[in-house]
Amino acid sequence: MFIENIGQVAINVKVLSRAKAFYRDMLGLQHLFDAGPHMTFFDCGGIRLLLETARDPQFDHPSSIIYFRVTDIEASFQAMTAKGLDFEQNPSLIAPMPDHDLWMAFFRDSENNLLALMSEVRHS
Image (cartoon, rainbow, N blue to C red; front, side, top):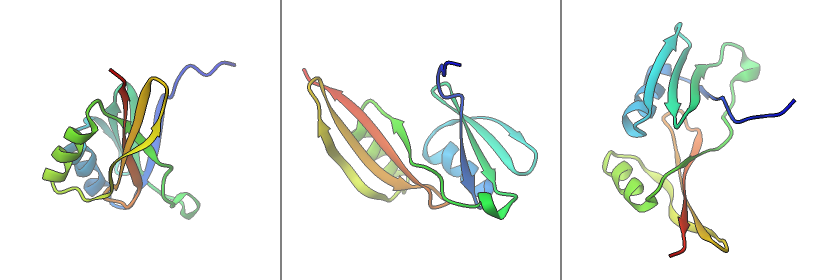
């Protein structure tokens, strides 16, 4: 068995309509389809993102951190801030690497899940 790539990531949400609006309007992800009253799907660069309300208490918990790759973290930060998004951490250099610098900025979605923007800035 060989893993090829990530096919889908699921995020638990409390209010599906609110989360759908956040991911569509604030993050600008392309909405793909809804599946019944508990699930909605988005495309994120070829990876399907599932937002789902937990129907069982054992699955009702915050998600893992998803890192959204952006080319220009400062421009993305400014655009999202202009839309009203409050960041917990402004764009910051996380790790200087031999061929690039890793930058991240952290924020929460409408359901209080921690998310991040990440940018790998190549050295000139």
